[in-house]
Length: 314
Image 1 (cartoon, rainbow, N blue to C red):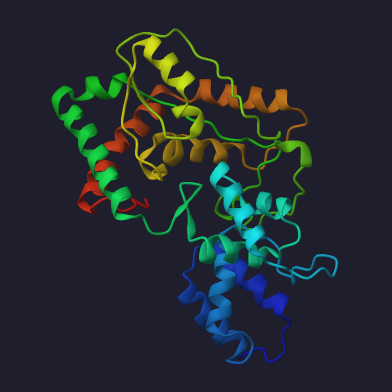
Image 2 (image 1 turned 45 degrees about the horizontal axis):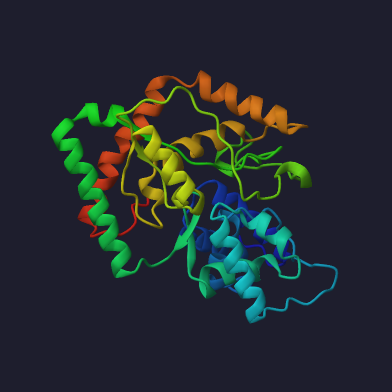
């Protein structure tokens, strides 16, 4: 028996539930068509809402912003692109707060269709790598594997990886991590949860020794002359890491993913509480956890070469 009369928000809620159950868009469309009939929502709309909910959308109602029209200009597109390039870990929620004049759906379309980005290991990266990017990825992968072939596990033990990420005062649970059948309660994120971007970054390190192979990405703070001079003074070797490669960075595909999952659903009042929780988690995690992240890199680099430099999704 099909439901002949249904509000759009009801169907969207069903789609959100099925997305949380990890049903494919094709399966979800067939379910919607079976229950609600042919005329309520077409395939394109169902697939569009599948993408929205998979990318973190939690609102099943029409997204209205005080009656203001969504105006997309070349200048706004450029500002969105600059924001993404400055911080590739920005979420759609954070970008929506930065550009309130844009509807969420239009903002997502601008990032994915107009600018050609998609999410990989929680970072925005180009959907299609250039031929040169792919060649660089293959070359870097071969260099790492050649060193591993020569020194084996000793090379992996000397490899250190580092990066930075934001941790908010409140990190929402992802649907698949929620204990209530994939339904996560709405929870407003405090505006002060993420401090403004600072051009200078500080980091705490333990004793520094020579013989370390550092693997970090080519973000501007990492490639600055002052950073290069500092690493030279340590006597460290800096491994080749190509642009747009979070899938080949253990911090992105292993460490930060686990950290954000651990922090999901937790709420803190101050920055110090957040720092304390992260520090506690990083010390409690067994050494085998960090070792596993580095060892996964061997498989990923091999797949990258086999795919001629294309992305390694999982």
